[in-house]
Amino acid sequence: MAGGIDWFRWHHGSVSDQKFILVARRSGASVAEVIAVWACLLEAASASDRRGNFGAVDYEAMDCALGMQDGRAQAIHEAMASRGVVTPGGDVAAWEKRQPKRERTDDNSTDRVRAFREKQRQSEPCNATERQETPRG
Picture 1 (spheres, one colour):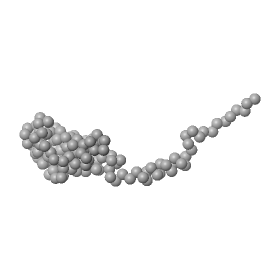
Picture 2 (cartoon, rainbow, N blue to C red; picture 1 turned 90 degrees about the vertical axis):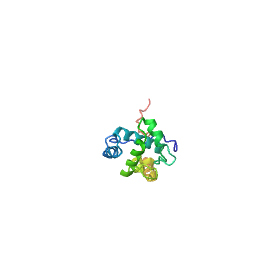
Picture 3 (cartoon, rainbow, N blue to C red; picture 1 turned 180 degrees about the vertical axis):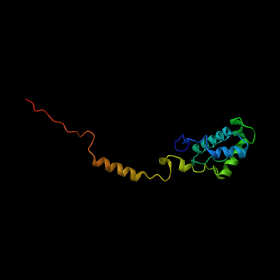
Picture 4 (cartoon, rainbow, N blue to C red; picture 1 turned 120 degrees about the horizontal axis):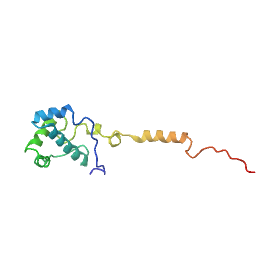
């Protein structure tokens, strides 16, 4: 697991994404098989030390794990590569763009934290309330 992060972001519409329908058509697979392979690749990319890179694919093991016909995972992967969904180097294309900003390399929280702290300094502390005291006696 990379840096203790054991999750990845799944986007709404992934299951009905047109590119997966095209990948299914090109590979001779069902859309369900394409989504299953996609999920396997995302999970491997998420668990990788270099997040976003799923590395070498064991197509035979994937076919077996997903109950697919021999060679199906490879055909799907090749169709994904031809559509630019994955790279020849084993990366999920646009992984960085699709992850939360706090995980991305372009997250520079310094300015955001500085502004937050300045705002806190300018506002009254939450325990600084005025109370009217009733004189005794």
